[in-house]
Image (cartoon, rainbow, N blue to C red; front, side, top):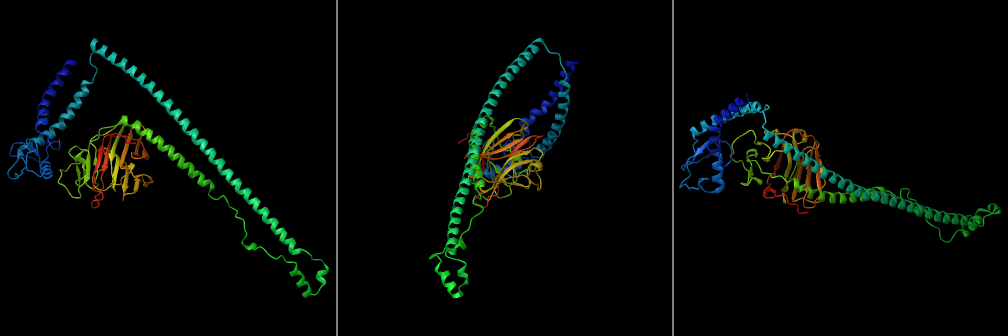
Length: 455
């Protein structure tokens, strides 16, 4: 039975490989690296997608073959190669069938097959090595956890000490204010009592029997030469207003300083999760131009002629990365420079790419945006405004798939910008939007850079 399955598999693979080899050599456009769409053939015999060749000539400014470099005296008339187009369509259909049948045969071959002694020995050795590797990894993990606990104890002890000191300072200031008020009131009361005595001084019962004129003259003779105007004397009953708030704000600033220190240390550790990110032109909106090295994207402010496909955004000026992640930790950096508008983050592979839609985690987007040069927003529902003290020229994006975190960092200051927390259930692509040019203010591209932190 095992031999029969293997023969069936080899027979099928042999038939499929004939078409498969042709597909590699004859059915892919060398410009977009995808199956031909409306293929055209140049006078020198090389074939390309019609749209791809037109874009190449427009960008190069020369009418020459992208493969052999042969120049043409006049721009060739590009007519769709009907024969190649028909064969390509047949291949496209057959490939879908081949994949489905290959999946069935692979499932058949995945049934248990008798292993030789050599195979068993090799498998045993692989598993022994895996056990040792897991034990070693666990040892490193424990060491890392211990360092984190020690660091957290040190940081929180310092913060608790700061809290206690701040509280003592507030209490001391309040008590000092109270003592000052008590001293002042005591002094004022003594002054008032003295004036009252002076006003009452020399009066007897017989004075009241004298005629009014004599009594009035005598009363005035007893008045002090200078009397204090007490109408402007008062006591403020809330002398410590704002003391606690100011102390809390001072603590908050101290916490932010400590958080920035931790953020810088975290960024250095994220370097080991650096991922190679390249843009996928097939997903780019028609107004976006992707560089030849797939590392830059800019808004052209005009509609470009691009082949239609279901993966392309047609209303929102986004482009996805070619890479998709469904596990592990990934980190990449993007140079935003002095741009006034941009969007960065991750998106589900299945997000809507046609028509209008709301950018939010509920719709599969975890994105931070800049608008008007200073308005930073996390695209939650409702949006979360982000108060940044430093305008980033370079942004780090960190994805922890299992933990459900997407974090953003300002690489210029090392500060943490924002973290989304969610549960991921499908592949995630890095997503980019350079924003509208707004004349020349925002015409610079977004650039995916090498992961080299400069903090």
